[in-house]
Image 1: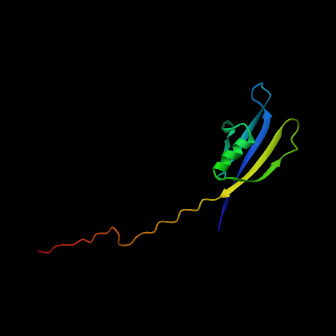
Image 2: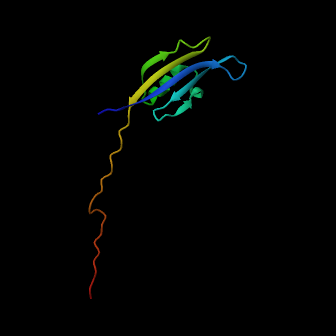
Image 3: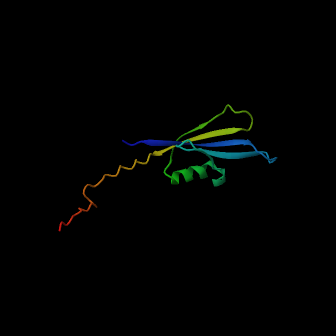
Length: 106
């Protein structure tokens, strides 16, 4: 059965740490629970979505949070991809590699 893993790309417009006004920040929430600032990888959502697509991710939904006041924006891009199959356990080969000890009685 095919299993999926999910990730979330969040685009947020927020006040800049310096006096330049506003900045757009992209945060990646990975299937392993990681949270990574991926802003340096591109300045548009399209650049980030294309990068995710190159890694096998598929966009399945997009949502926007209109409840934020002022110039804040929050967009969520929901992605999924097939979960890699777990490696099959290695089977032991019986008899292979074993040498028989012989004793010489004399």
